Image (cartoon, rainbow, N blue to C red; front, side):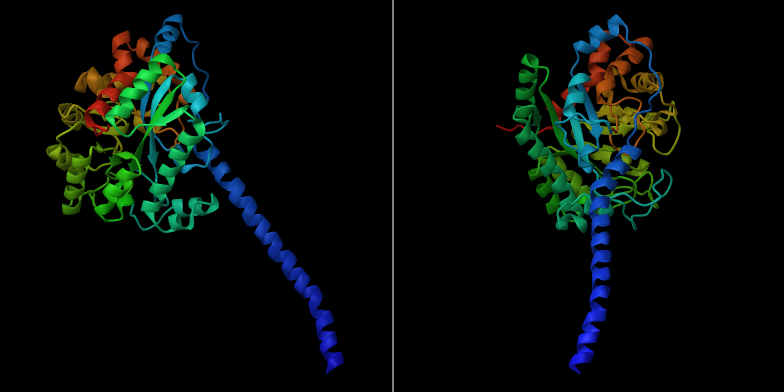
Length: 403
């Protein structure tokens, strides 16, 4: 028995060593994947077009140097990059914001996207973000909760504000905006951001989460993203319906708190219903216009006029689906159409930087957009409005007063 047992132990030990080596190797692969895969995915999904752009004229440089650019949509919080450091990938960080004169950036939280995502029809039955959250080491609570994912991304921006020691400020009130604009007048290196969510599925069907996300700093809610949700239909959903009873309650609470309504990705019936209830300016944070690029993603002239009637703005994006092109001239052409329909006080930049798009330029390259606007025949005063002034006006009208 003893000899037999001893023989069994001797023959088992090499097998156990092989097992431990195998398990250790698998763990190493998982750790390597967790550290490398998200960065590889982010680089692949967020390139800059890279096409050589014309040299900037002296007039472009002069106007650009005087600007305070404001952008209505950027999804960089989905990716684990240090915003205080210049990155070789993606589109947004503080150094590139400074170079591009981007003074205000909307940091928009993505909490769920469907697999095989497209602009025609998607259900909400699948999710790409869960795996990304796991691989990036997000808190376990975010793995199964969309609200927790939004809260985590808000926490990342607030932590960056603290680490930056004044380099980046988060805007939550009109007082914050006024203080920032005063500081920016004395120091153009100071930049600001405000929080938005891309789709009210992050509320998880609970009206109390409107207040919870407001408390975390969110000041703009995109009602839908790529699939229908409890608030209403997506332009890319299955039913593409209008506002639900829950959605009406959400809009009412948003209005009470001072949360900006974002109709990007909303179905036409949802746009109609939300605009009919609007008491404050409403925006499309990022997208294109059907007048120059007619697809399900983009906004009709009728809806552009209705958005302008609220005092809101249309943020024109920087990727091919929005523009049917990939040059600054294509962007300026879409801006021209929007201005002709809405008026120059109602058009803005809505880049969708770091939103899994191939962007025309990154945050450092906004001077090329200025040049395209000049080439399109816009005057300097109009460029000031389009590149930032209109967004500042809307924020000043919608943000809660603060103290």
